[in-house]
Amino acid sequence: MADPELVRFTLDNGLRVVLAPDATAPVVGVSVHYDVGFRSEPEGRTGFAHLFEHLMFQGSESLEKLAHFRHVQSSGGTFNGSTHPDYTDYFEVLPAAALERALFLEADRMRAPKLTQENLANQIDVVKEEIRLNVLNRPYGGFPWILLPPVLYQTFPNAHNGYGGFEDLEQASLDDCAAFFDTYYSPANAVLTVAGDFAEANARELIEKHFGDVPYRPAPVRPSFAEPVPDGELRGEETDPHAPLPALAVGYRMPDPINDVDGYLAHLVLAGLLTDGDGSRLQQRLVHREPLVVDIGAGAGLFGPFEARDPDTFTITAIHPPDVTTEQVLAALDDELEKLAANPPDEQELRRVTARWESSLHSEHDRLVSRTLALGAFELLYGDASLVYRLADRMAAVTAEAVSGAAKSLRPDSRAVLVIRPSGAEPNGAEPSATEQEGAEQ
Image (cartoon, rainbow, N blue to C red):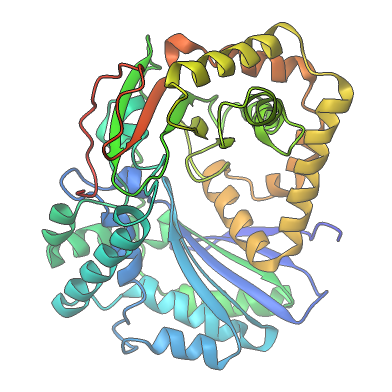
């Protein structure tokens, strides 16, 4: 599909708006991105950004609990929200005729969500159950996104558990909720995106009607979360009572995702060369030729690429048999990185990865919900929603030398290694020092 023309403007209350008209199907996507994620939550309140996302679905001053669900679903639409390191998003996808309904619902909870003790207690229990299901009672739960950051990073914003510890969640108060809302959930700290089948003039009129009178509050000053790169190898170890096999995660610091986009993209291509598909270098060596691991993966970002500002994390994860040591896996990994650092990939290998990335980006843009969310996230993080449509070309332009440079930057003396041991497993010679974890209780 051709890239839609973007229209960008800002309301008097500071709300940034992105319009992406596309009449190919009679549907619209509406999203609101708030410039707050779990890196911004206060110390002693781990998991609060995600908990607050849940509260935003519990009604408002003008709509009862579950009304949001009912209004969207009765229109034939879908909706959800999610919390990321540096933003929280909410969205609806509905038939085009229901655009005003979605705008009303988002403006309504931006104005005043229903913050009650009953809703708070209920959602604390819901989030705790989510943590039990997704982390505590699942093999490799929280691996690596909860367990690796405390090894690689030193500061609370970067190192703490964004899902939250039970004790912190249980101590959350209504005053905490009100302060968090007042600080971060202002129109001046948000981006509204509308994509799909609509007339620009009508959308502008409806947006002004529903969001224009949301009171202005200044956006908070966003602190820098920067911290120095490690000046040595850092080690941590965790025991997993549900894991059938040992595992390890290796974390490296990446180039600044916002101010060094091309360096960041080179790392994405490197991840593809290493583990994307059966022909990738680490799959070939560690799964097929040697074989040292049963599963290996590499990627940018703890949740995926383009979801965080600096600092961001390049991860390599492996699950391996008990008779293979951590050091064997690391030695093979370092050897492959050294080869790539010394000898850039040939054109055919490079194009295999970049073509796959281009295809993936284009197919994501074809999905209205993905496009709506990407436009909002890029407007928020980069100040430029249109970068979404230039990413595929930027990816295709990544050079072999840039990928080689990315491999060279992943150094053994500036990384974190997290070892996961099944309960009862004997140490396998890795000799890591235990690292105190802050997060969900085991």
